[in-house]
Length: 64
Image (cartoon, rainbow, N blue to C red):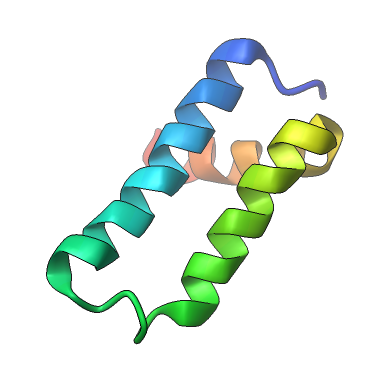
């Protein structure tokens, strides 16, 4: 499955909001591993969109 533009935007916003939530709560350093994984996933989306297609499917299943 190719990650569509709409799905890519949704996934990137969802991941970024998770980082922002940790920042607002003041727990960014406590969730260092998760934040690092989010940042790496965002990088993968930019460089290799095929690598995150499975993640998009899992998120869609969780949400919908």
